[in-house]
Length: 60
Image (cartoon, rainbow, N blue to C red; front, side):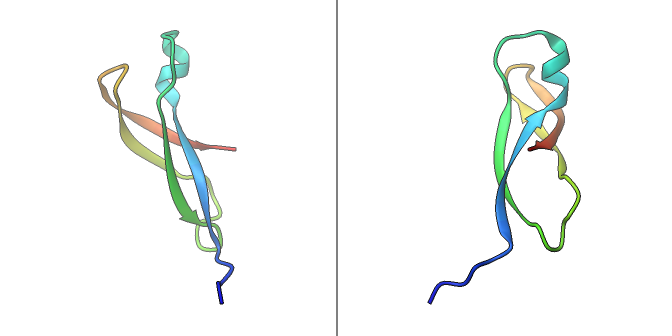
């Protein structure tokens, strides 16, 4: 019997890429436990277009 968990997939999007005006978008997919982590996630991830580590925030 499968359990219904609290883990959901979320998309992380680069915050610096939007303001740079360059084409494309840097996005990552990860999972989080929505019961334990109610606020939006924020990680430093590598952006291959800008070629540097930038802040990626969870989008809706």
